[in-house]
Length: 337
Image (cartoon, rainbow, N blue to C red):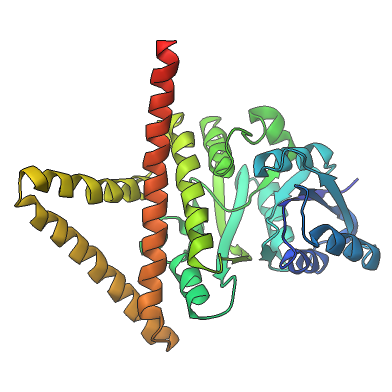
């Protein structure tokens, strides 16, 4: 029986799935004590073909594909957990590449009781070629873009509110339940809130590292952050006590972009507040872009970083407000019935 089950939700990841499998094949952890369970959501590209070819070529690593008919990430994770046999469950994503010591360090920290969920640092790399893809990756790892999400940039170990992916004792799921399948994203954050409420701890170890490939263009980035904001709001409405400042600021900012101009229609001097806010915001964006441009010796980052961060903030904050508004209307509608 394997000691570790690596679970992977997957859908149309033909560009990165072999990078993940190769990284798992070269782990500093006995392959005979590890299995990989991939929950594929009926991929329509060559993902499954590439997985099957890898299985044939590398019989030393036990890899299985299970079919996730619901095609959502939490459903795939839960299916993979139920199909897994390991004492420890380690989640990774199909567009990530863990360092060679990733599994060993996760298992060591779990065995030493460091946390009930153990995770590490994302090293965010461009998901495409060109200056804009690079700008997106840099923006997604800067505090101005992501707030105090320490797993994107810290070098200090700490107890935190969430970590990327996660490594768990299997018995933990029997104690607090599986991933919430009503959430299409943010299922990991919601699980961590239940761990903490049950008296558990989330441990961030910067030595545990994985490469994560950012979205390749602004449209993909906008879709990602709209999804993040929408489902974060749905999760937080049922867990309001765990809300963080980094989650409040984007919807407050987007609200101000709407409310202050409306107020100025009735009170014209208010427009100056709006102009000052916009001026400070874009000045900060330009400064961050300029610092990156000088460090990377790439002047295209001066417009690239502000573009990426603005898309992240507006889409996340707008989707959060849209989700809250829709949820409130739904509850009022049900209340009239």
